[in-house]
Amino acid sequence: MKEFTYTITDAQGIHARPAGQLVKLAAGMGCNITITKDGRTVDAKRIMGVMSLGAKQGHTVTIQADGEGEAEAIEALETFMKENL
Amino acid sequence: MEALNGKSVFGGIAIGKIKIFDKGESVVKRTRVEDIQAEITRFEDAKETAKEQLGALYDKALIEVGEVNAMIFEVHQMMLDDLDYVEAIRHMIEGQNVNAEFAVATVGDNFAEMFAAMDDDYMKARAADVKDISDRVVAILQGKQDIGVLSDEPVIIVADDLAPSETVLIDKSMVLAFVTRHGSTNSHTAILARTMNIPALIGIDYSDDMDGKQAIVNGYDGIFYVDPEASVLKEFQEKQKDDLDKKRLLLELKGKEDVTIDDKRIHLYANIGSVADVAAVLANDATGIGLFRSEFLYLGTKNYPTEDEQFAAYKTVAENMGGKKVIIRTLDIGADKQVDYFQLGKEDNPAMGYRAIRICLNEPAIFKTQLRAIYRASYYGNISIMYPMIISVNEVRQIKAIVEEVKDELDAQKIPYGEVEQGIMIETPAAVMISDLLAKEVDFFSIGTNDLTQYTLAIDRQNPKLDSIYDSHHEAVLRMIRMVVENGHKENCWVGICGELGADISLTKTFLKMGLDELSVSPSMVLKIREVIRNTDTTK
Image (cartoon, rainbow over the protein chains, first blue to last red):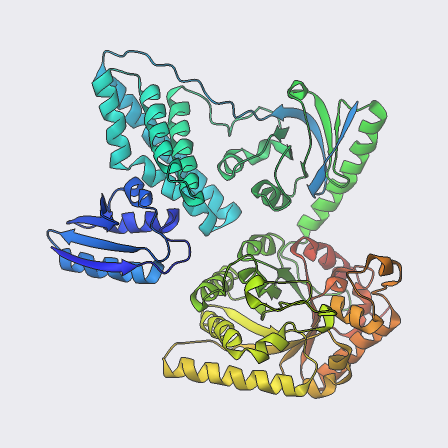
């Protein structure tokens, strides 16, 4: 299992569009991916869950990947978060 | 006959039958089903149909309102495929033997409540999204026709208000005009009406019994006539005919060159104030953007826009214009445009106060952020920069030094950028009087006639008592423009107009004769000016 923690800098947080992009990216990966915020964990491949986190600017989220290709997955997700959020 | 007063958001005349667009909450009844598998299949099929509709909506919206706004429909598609949502619906059908409509509506409500309970605006919008997709699936299950099919003849759409997904859905060939009770001049409906070139009114207090009645939409005066008298009908039919002739003529001018009978060429560009305006620029066939007001990035936000936010906006516009010229005007805050976080303080005479380039040169950090964003975006298209409120050669030299710093920084970071033409706004009499000196420093001049008139005539634009003597055709203003053109051309500096005077067709011939190289006007004026240009012979 691999993970990283990221603090959101985008003024609007994980709003509808980046949530969609994030889920799309996660859905294409073979391993399990979760996002945790304030102790609540959701499946990163499910958009309603990701949106329900209500992650906004200044919030810290932890992304975990578990399974085949977890290292690549974490790398790709980290890049995505830095570029878009 | 009844005449209702409202506000026009787009001009034109429409005559036809009223169709009241009633969203009417659909009633979903709970029924017991025996064949659970068949019910789940019904749901799955309806979900697929909904996704197809959303795909079509996305394609339509992409053209009508651009990618950023269209993406919401892609997100809706993903929400329909969300396993939490889909499984909840399946479980409900299986566990409670209920019909698919009821399961979708109930699960949709539950999810919407979950979002709505989180009590912030962002989450409320998500609640609306879930309702929207669930309503769509329910409508399909109930065999309701898509609201795209409104009628078999073109109608005047009358509604309380229209949401983006509704306006995008409507079959445009069946719409003569939009009339709404709510909405604003900048609402989605208004933008759409402008893009479609059909009249639209807001603030019309209609009643439901008007459905099916004949009506006239007067998009010039904002009046909605229901059951018009024969004489009124005749009057507007004639007006409409004139309009249509004009529209046809304008349509014929799309793709035509901006050249006079005696072969004088001029660049006809458009003014924009946001990324979304690019659609109108392209629809009206402007050959470039002569004034991209960058203030929208600063207004209405709580803090300074970041370099990346600015870069994204400039890059999008440059790319969408596909290599055509885009002239970005740097920050023009101050005077009548106030932004809280700049903490500019109250001034007795703001039009002559701390504004525009004066702020930028005093706070180079803010200025450099914008310049970096513009230079980075220049790699993706044909970008030029112009600086507002210039009064001296010294200012231009200071700007050029900062630009050099920015370029050096980008070079050091190996960030690519393109060739960026440098220009200044000519909007002060001082700039006019030393335009011979300024022309040696820059590539182009763009005359801002609104401020130039105000400063030349010493008339405050904001003072309504002076409206009667505010004369933008004043000989002093015209002489100033002529002087700028002559001085600019001596130094190979091209000269344009981006103020309101540029769109004044009574002056187009005068400007052509003066030798102006460019006119930049609001997108809706582009083709009108083109018509005048093509019918002008400057030798006569």
